[in-house]
Length: 429
Ligand code: SF4
Ligand code: SF4
Image 1: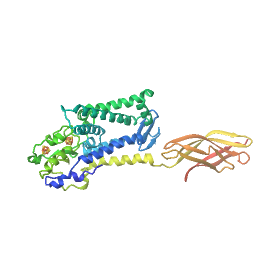
Image 2: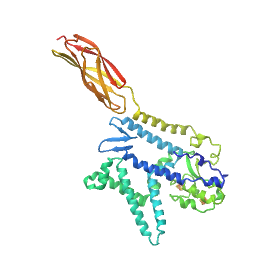
Image 3: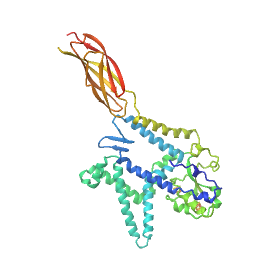
Image 4: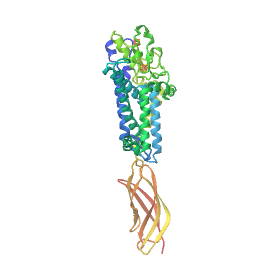
C-alpha cells in the first residue's frame, strides 16, 4: 500500500515549492504497472489458478488438495476482508489505482493520445485514420494477450497457449481464449469508463462500505475564490467529472488526476491546489494535528476492527498453507486373526494424520512382541488430511505366548513420533 500520509496533509498555507511535489500520476502509474505484471505472473507461475480441467487450485504457489476446502474458505474471507478494509478506509482508491478495468481503460486512452501526438493528427486531419488503425491493432494485440492470461487462470497455461495458436485442436479452450479476448477488446475499444460509471457492481457496493470519514477526493470550497475556472481539472479527469460539483460523485474513481491538474495550474501562480485527498468532508479534520494512525485512516474503533480482519485472515491462511499440526494416530483391531504353523498375525485399521500441509513419509515399528513385523512398515500420508488403512502385525508362532499381549505401535515422521498402545492376540492353536 502506498503511503498516503504526507501527501494528504495539504493546507491552504502550502507554498508553491511544497505544492510542486504533490504529484499522484507517477505513483499511480507505477502501482498500475506492478498490478499488471502481477496479473500476468500469477497464473503462469501457479501463484493463483483454478484449473477446471484438472481440478487443481493454486494459491500463493501452494497446490491445494480436494480436502483443502477450509483453506479455500479462508482465502475467500481474506479477499473479502481486504476489499472491505480498503473500501472502508480509502474509498474508490481500489478503482483508480488497482482495478484491472481502469488499467485497461487508461492503457487504451493513453495509447490513443500518444499515437495522435506521434502522428501529429486529430479528428478531421490527415493521418487520423492511420493513427486510429494503429491504435485498434495495438488494442487487439493486447486484448489477445489478456485473453490468454485470463484463460490461464482457469486452464493450464500450456493448454491455453496451444489453443490460442490452433483453436481447432481444442475448441473449448480456444473459445475461452478468444471470447475472453473479444470481451476485453470490446471493453477497451468502446466501453472503457462507461463500464466503471454504469455497470460495475463495486460502485453501488462501495456506498454501503463507506462513511463520513472515508478517504475521498475533495474540492476545497472554502478556497473557491482562488479558482481561476481554467477547467483543467475537468479536462484531465478520465471520467469527465467536475469535482467542483461536490465530493463523492458516483463516477469518481479516486485517481487524483484532477489534483495534479490543479496543482500544476495554481502552482505556476505560486498557490496551492484546490483539490485534495481527504478523509471525510470536514475541512477542519485534515490538519497538521492528525495523529499517525489517523493519517492511515484509522479514525475510530470500527476502522480498527475492519482493518484488523485482514492480518487475522492472512495469518490463518498462511498457517493453513505452511503450518503443521501434531502427528496423530489411532489403531483399532479389525478381528482378522490368523495362526499358522510358523506365524501369528493380527489385522488392524490404522488412522493417522501427519499434520503437515504436504504429503509425508511415515515409518511404522512394533515393540512388546518377540520377532514382530508390521506390514506395511512405511506409508505416504496425505498432506493436511487423515487416512485410514489396514495394517498387519505378525509374530513368530514359536515365540509368542498364547493369549493377549500388550504391544506398542510407533508411527515416526523424522524426529516426530506417535506411540499407540493396543493388544496382540495369539490363539492357542
Ligand atoms: S474527479 Fe478527480 S479523482 Fe475523480 S475520477 Fe476525476 S480526476 Fe480522478
Ligand atoms: S484546475 Fe483548479 S483552478 Fe482550474 S478550474 Fe479546476 S479547481 Fe479551478
